[in-house]
Each structure stands twice: as structure tokens, then as C-alpha cells.
Amino acid sequence: MNNETTTLISLKESVKRVEHKLQALEAQFKELDFTKDNLTQKFEHHSKTLASQAAQDELWTAVLAVKFTSMELNILYSYVIEVLICLHTRVLEKLPDLVRGLPTLASVLRRKVKNKRVRIVWESVLEEYGLQEGDITALCTFFIAHGNKAEHFTAKVRQMYIRDVTVLITNMVKNQALQEGLLRAVQVIEKGKAVRAPEEQKSFLKELIPSVKN
Image 1 (spheres, rainbow, N blue to C red):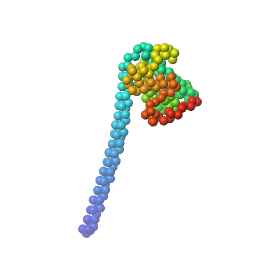
Image 2 (cartoon, one colour):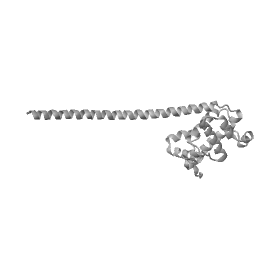
Image 3 (tube, one colour):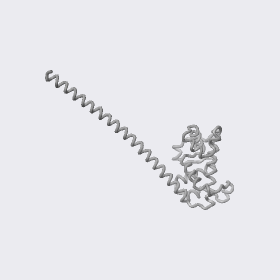
Image 4 (spheres, rainbow, N blue to C red):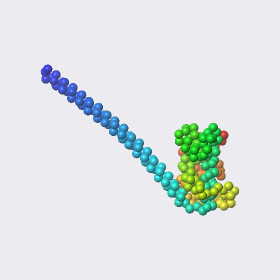
């Protein structure tokens, strides 16, 4: 075997070793990219979770911090409970075959997470009344916090005590999510549908079309 042949064999072996190293490096880079993507997704999910928890904590703090009189609390509670009952009733009207399986609004909220049909109907009901999930979170938080000590006032009784409940809400409630949720609850009960601000309507265009009830 001459020197040229030996050199050629040695060169081929070197090339193979380099190729193997490059393949190993490529595999490592792919693994690093995969790990980076996983970490990024986990971080984003964790950030969203923390943000959601912070918003929920802030909402709870706001609900418990406002010092309503007994009369004021009963009036606001009345609007809240009437809206929640209204939403539950409307969902059942659209899902008559699931009446027994959805005895409460809480059951609707649980089922919509995994049941696409319930979720679609729930979203359509919210759209009909000009509400969004954030409003429901605020109203449910208010209901849970005060439901055991408040009582329902009829519309006639409410009007005897206060003429414009929106003034009460805007003056007493400073948390934006809670204030907007309560104001929209009043609008739904008194006007049949919540009216959103112009900037909100841009992202909620379907609400500009009057709802057609079945």
C-alpha cells in the first residue's frame, strides 16, 4: 500500500469522524431547542397562571374591602343573583335535553370546560346579553362572598331605596373588573343587555347586532 492510498484512507476516516461529530452536535442542538421550547411554554403558562391568580386575589380583596350598607348590599346582590339565574335559565332553554345534568349555574361552568356543546351555548348566551367571562368571574365572586348574608330585593323594592344604582357602584367600587361586572349586571336586568364602551365594541362586534331569542 503506497503513501497516497494510506493518506486517502486516513482522510476518509477523518471525514467520517467529523461527520459523526457533526451529527452528534446536531442531535444535541435539536435536544437543546426542544428543551428550550418546553421551558418557554412552561414559563409562559406559569406566568399566565400567576397573572390570573393575582387578578383573582385582587378581585377577592376588592369584593371584601368595599363596605356596603345592608341595604346597598341587598340591592347589588339582587342584580347579581338575577343575572346569574337569567344566564342559567337561558342555557337550559338552549339545552333542554341537559336540564337534569345542569341543575345549577356552577354545573354549567364546570361542564363547559370539557363539553364543547355546553361551551358553545354558554358563549352564545354571554354574547346575547353583552357579557364576557370576566364579568361572570366578578359576579360569581361577589355572590360567593356575600350570598350567605344578603337577601333579594324585587325591582319595585329596589326603586324605593335608590334611584340610580350605577352611581352607587361607580362611587363605591374602585376595582375595574368588579365595577364593570356590576354595572353590566344592572344593564342586563334593566335594559335586557349590557352596553359596552366603544373601544370594547371593536373587539366584540357581534354585540352590535340585536340578539334574536329562540
